[in-house]
Image 1 (cartoon, rainbow, N blue to C red):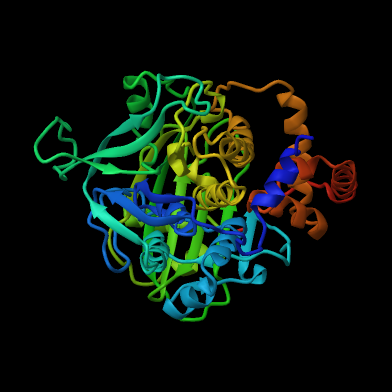
Image 2 (cartoon, rainbow, N blue to C red):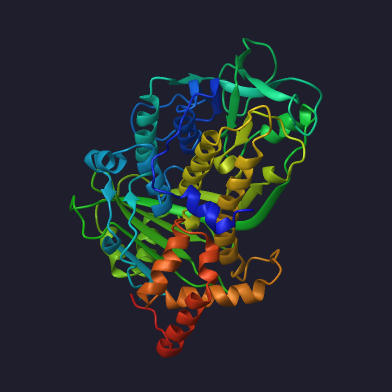
Length: 485
């Protein structure tokens, strides 16, 4: 009997530490040392004699920006679903993060505003508030402390295969046997051939190369199928400023203020603020619709003044560094689960599979749930001579959930022109009813936030009882809203 998507999601988002781990392979190789790659390496450490992370950046020993993550200065949110997975993979992670300077928030130190109206707290889910480099450094330190995990600073330039002819990947079919590597060159240089290249043997390979992953190219060149890529234009611009925080233990840990879609995109579609390490505020303003980026600090402060008071107060402190900008043109996903021919001993995770509109904060939590899917796959005693189809099936549930949440919100914008899925109008109406009720009703807020924080599958919102409650709440409380400063 097939598991429902909701059951799969619940299984992957469990809080229970991994059990029944056993060694299945000699060497596993992970391509990419960002968060998705580090979490995959942590899972593989339970099942491989050794794990090698191949990363072209020299990974810093402490929190620092690096070329491979040009967006790491922007706000990143570790949602409740991802937070639980890090605690599961690294016992004591929250305590260590707090001791190192992160703010581990309760639900009552998070504020949310819809069109200026304060939303009720769900009273259930909190966040780890920190910068992206801080969080990644902590995960990196915990992962590389494992005795069987190490990093090679080099470039991955292709894959090696062994076995029979390219086929559906049945027993005796072809499998990945190694990764072709080369020395690090300047960014943008052609990979070339020769020049000190070698093959790093591998019994299992994980592609964690991010949005620009070359895995599709490598598969096609070797005679396999290239995964189709779906894109959805979003054209979002971020501007992020850092400001001095005067209190080390703030009553406010994080806030989000968003405006519902309008015919003319507002200058600020969403503003987010979070208290981070080293007594700083990190504030991100997002805008759509091919507007000019927000680069000037005077404009940044002025726009924060048009948001709820917590934003005005935060930007009154000392500015720390320049305003950082980032543009993302689209959301995208590669549908590996649809491939009929795929080599054994190979998977892809994180942004290499799907990257979403970053305004919804799903990236790091999705990567954590991909790691959970890998853990479940390897603990199920898989036949490694076959393609990892059960892994891709589980991963698809996570990707579908995040894609549904982010694209549904993007499609509601007037400056986005589809493609609209079947039944979109009805689905949009349902979503609007639940989102509106979550502003004032705690019970609906708990269910709504459990989905948006990647703790529950979106199908949980389709329960008749949830919709009926939302309709009753909206009918009794609907009245003209005015924006509040």
